[in-house]
Amino acid sequence: MARRRTSRRLTADVCLLVVAVAFALPLAWVVLSSVDPHADLRVKTPDGFTLGNFDAILTPDITYTPLLNSLVLCGGATALTVVCAAFAAYPLSRFRSRLNRPFLLTILFATSLPITAIMVPVYALFVRVNLVDTLQGTVLFFAASQLPFAIWLMKNFMDGVPRELEEAAWTDGANALQSLVRIVLPLMGPGLCVVTVFSFVMMWGNFFVPFMLLLTPDQMPASVSINDFFGNRGMVAYGQLAAFSVIYSTPVILLYVLVARRLGGGFALGGAVKG
Image (cartoon, rainbow, N blue to C red; front, side, top):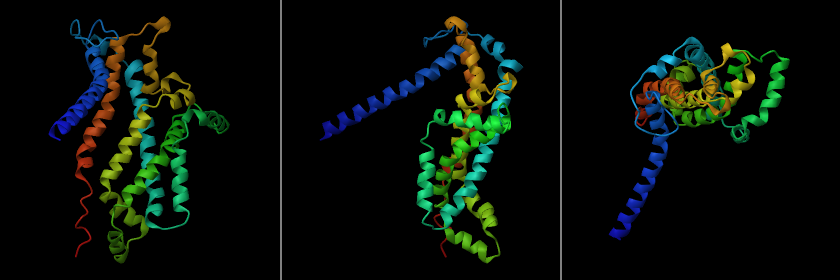
């Protein structure tokens, strides 16, 4: 038995190591190639150390404007998604109805629809309402595409907040909106962080939606402008591409670092309804 357990643990460790290496290799290539003056597709020790790749891309046209566009698009869409998901999930969590389950299954089905399957009718609709090539139109579509799964997540987190806490607030004269804003949402802080991070990351890496809905180069986000590093005839500036990838990943990493402590805190509601 001991030998079997040892062999199973060894097999599991080897499998986990292989998976870790598979994830680490692309990250290692990005970091090493960003400071390599002769970067290519190989993961190798840099031939020398240079910051020229960063100097080449740190310009308004290449980096600053696309990153600002990405922050405006993804930040605005994330805020809209979280607010709408909170208001939609609250009645689903607090009120019982025969329509709750069919509605939840419907929005869960909506998350499985491929984005490419709905872009043609969405584009036609945006043309008719003059939302093509507008940041606000792209923000609305980003929020609408992430809202179904955000509602599903938000509802599950709200279920973990004891209803007795709201009833105590109602006794003191609070209405449903006040209990949601002052009781439920603060107590489900980790859930809000999860929904926020998930929505932001999914929008931040989205290439297809802004590529289809935005036409003006000055409005393109970084997820689209990164395609400019792939030149004609297969020529790619690998060092500059890696440097841009490092900068492009920084906002997501910073967002996770900011909410990591909140994510690890848990709900801690075990004794909230005692006594």
